[in-house]
Every structure is written in C-alpha cells, then in structure tokens.
Image 1 (tube, one colour):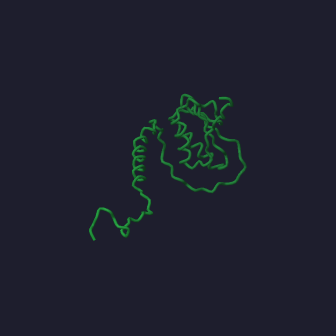
Image 2 (cartoon, one colour; image 1 turned 135 degrees about the vertical axis):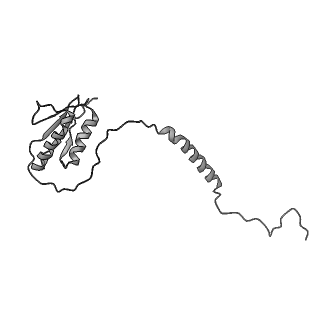
Image 3 (cartoon, helix red, strand yellow; image 1 turned 180 degrees about the horizontal axis):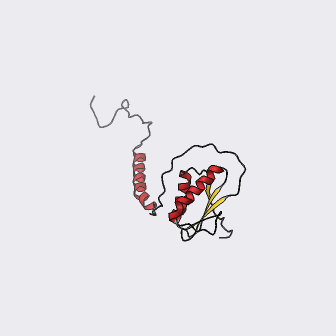
Length: 155
C-alpha cells in the first residue's frame, strides 16, 4: 500500500478526554504576579515608637475569694505625676514611683480581692501609664485594671 497524505480509517486519531491545564496555570501565574506587585502598595504601615515595659513572666496564683472592698485608684496626671485615692493631696513624681509600687504591692498582699485601678488623664504620657501597669503586674498585683470613660453617644 502506498503511503498517501491521508490517514486511513484504521489509524484515526482518538479524542482526548483530559483537561488541558496549561491555560489555567498561565492565568494562575499572572494573578500571582499581580498580587505580589500590589501587596506592598496595599499595606500602608504607620511607624510608631511604642513605650517600653519590663518583661512579664506569668505567675499562676489562686485567687482568694473575699468581699470586694473599696478600690484603690492611682491617677496619672497630665504632667505625668501620680496621686492616689488614699492621699489625693499628695503628688508623687516619677522618682517616687518605687514607693508607690511598694505601697500597692503591700495592699495587694493584705487584701488580694481589693481592686487596683489606674486612671490616666487623656493627655497623660501613655508610656507612664503602661509602665506603671506592667510594673504592678510584674510585682504580683493581680487585680489591677485601667480605668476608661465610655464614649458619649452621638460622636
């Protein structure tokens, strides 16, 4: 038999029942490149210098169940000075912070259920408020919280 340019009926090409994935891979790679280029543009980072606090090591203590007493409030003023609810007329500076921490730790050891609140003025240095909070936590004062004021409706 002579080989002509036409195929015979016997050697007919069979249809493929497979999916051609090459176009899908091409589209996926194009999308990947687009996302890689646009991701840094979308992330608009704001650089801030956060206040530094001492490292906190978790201590597990069982909380004693006692009657809640009058809370002890420490106020951080706009100037960065400290006052307490026990002696509101006495203003403590940053140098006297160790005495204040010792007093709060002693109060917490005498009555673990007594809540300790830190009330920072809106214009007070943020670092001082967080530093006081962390120092109290590190020294074993478990029941310390930050006081906030709820937002007025309509703002």
